[in-house]
Amino acid sequence: MVVSNFGKNTEFFPFNQFFSFLIVKSRFYPVNLQLEFLKIMENINWSNLTFGYLKTDFNVRMYYRDGKWSDLEVTDSEYIPLHIAATCLHYGQEAFEGLKAFKGKDGKIRIFRMHENALRLQSSSRGILMAELPVDLFEKAVVEAVKCNERFVPPYESGASLYIRPLLIGSSAQVGVKPSKEYTFIVFVTPVGPYFKEGFKTTPVSIFRDYDRAAPLGTGTIKVGGNYAASLVPGEIAYSKGYSAVLYLDAKEKKYIDECGPANFFGIKNNAYITPASTSILPSITNKSLMQLAEDLGMKVERRQIPLEELATFEEAGMCGTAAVISPIQRVDDTDNGTSYVFSKNGKPGAVCEKLYNTLRAIQYGDAEDRHGWVTVL
Ligand code: PLP
Ligand code: COI
Image 1 (tube, rainbow, N blue to C red):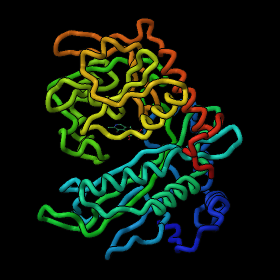
Image 2: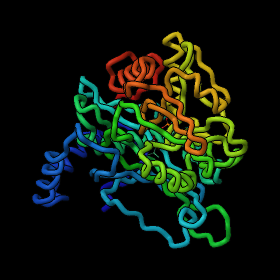
Image 3: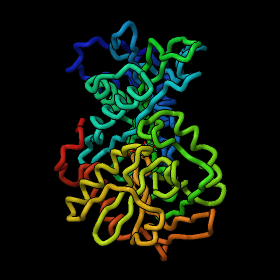
């Protein structure tokens, strides 16, 4: 059911009150459904959430047709009516984003760096010839998606967050390999716990030379579904062998570190934060933030190629991303030649990873000053 189709002049519309009203008092929903809503909320164990899909109340959508973006539509449907020849289904015209909202001690909701995600979606759109969504429309949709699902933002004490998933798809028909003329933009949200079930604990990762995630001049730098399809087989092999992710080497020479499953890689040594420069990795917004925080903490920041052998010199290593936050790496196994690079002998995260993790989380939850203007407080 489309709940509402808001016009352009809704800047000051009191969405919070409107949607709380809709949820618990509205005549749109029968009483049994309202009770169902309350039961769902009671059953959520916020501290034990995994990184999975949990149905929320609404998602928001915009449509690109005849060269224009539509107004924002709010719906409670989890489905999209889609043409069987839509380009997203056949030719991979699909890009997505991932960002998070956090509830602070003060009860306020904070969205982390959504401007950056808006820009990255534009870059992904340019990469696969999709219509670019203006930054202000992206931000408006994200804010509305969070506001109309406010009751699903996990409480401060739980350490969980609301994952926000914007996606853009080519939705009109083409049978020849051509870009779509129409696009559908959707933002849904879901409350999540840690991506790696261990949370802020070290885990092992593995190198497999037989698989590449993205080509050096391919689509690795943009966030398109095809990259993730390419990572499914090696990812499953890694999980089945007890690894939390695959550490990809550069596809051309297999000499340098690329990235780590759905996260960027970083290493720490001699008070330096070192992260790969590569033409096939996603420019992580978390990594960008950590580079800034490392600099704030007086560390040297290096973004450059990291030869595989350099792993032996790192004091600590980690994966970073919106979902992963910081996941410290216990060891990297090079399964092709039996070498193991161990970063944590006792299995505990290193001091620098811990400091960076705590500093980032404090900004996201509003416990530390937002010196760089990264947070949008609702
Ligand atoms: N690398 C890949 C392949 C990813 O999927 C992600 C997740 O978005 C990241 C890195 C981390 O990026 P970000 O910190 O912007 O979430
Ligand atoms: C994110 O960190 O937001 C991601 O997109 C990772 C994801 C593929 C689960």
